[in-house]
Length: 419
Image 1: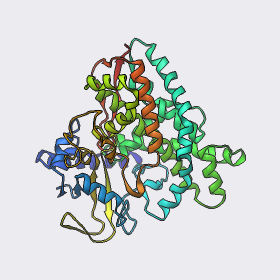
Image 2: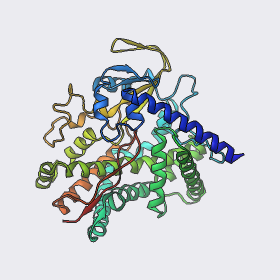
Image 3: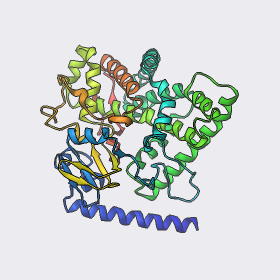
Image 4: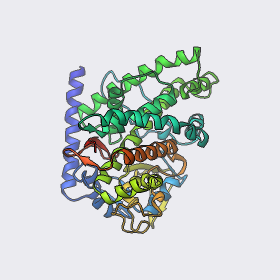
């Protein structure tokens, strides 16, 4: 029975990919983006969707900076439909044997979103983040010591992934684990943001959710017996006071773990890849490490790790003179908004001299503004400062490998030679 289910699922997903590919071949800009036909450079397609446009795949898109920011901040829009029937949690695998999953607070509207986010918020306050700098710096140089001792190293596997995994694991209070496993789970969950598109995706997602469920279920009784200063202990305390359910606790921990390293690892990889193509900007950063903060913002603007997100109006809404019905899917093209010429002069140019790079929308906006943004900024600044100090020249070895995903944009492999 399970095999029959898998065969049927694989056939159905294959048909959906074929239909999407056909719409992409017909020239639909959104279909070209989400099918991967324009994966290497989606920005030309985004430029065709600056206003409010309807795609033949059945969704509306907004692509200007003003429209994207407006939708993300507008309380009339939610991340779920008004009857709460959709969309399914991104971690849901349609295969038999998959664990029951619930939506994370990123997939919930108020009041549940507000309640759960408030429980996790204290760990990401300004005072806490400032206290992490010494530890982040020490971990950064430890990883670089090991990487630079090799004839060549993989920036992603040797540095960009293990750095944020170490930081978020310490913050959560996770026992020492296997970075490779966490990376695999993160890739599976990151890919699920595009929707389950193949039988392989469904299997990887089932493996990831099962493993993470087992991990956090095992930690709950441990923290009940012996709480510490970590985030999991804080959430377990809230569980004991009835402020959240065990299911909500587990999904919150999974979100903090995966989101806690996915965005930052892609930020670091995208940054180094971009700087390698712009050696004059790398020289400018090396000459003035104080530019690291601006460098982080310009990378986030130019090559955002999160390219798009979706919202649903909960009442009739007018956008740019167009009437939008309740529960219509509206896709916000963050990657396009970040290159809007109405906001950013010469938007396809990467430059550290850009004064308003921080106006990007890569951390979203409104009530769903990224909870971990201050931590990601800190890790990005420390990483780029250390790399600029210890890698006078960026010398790639072979071609970079990009993820085969649309919502998440980043590298899976990028080999460099030490100077």
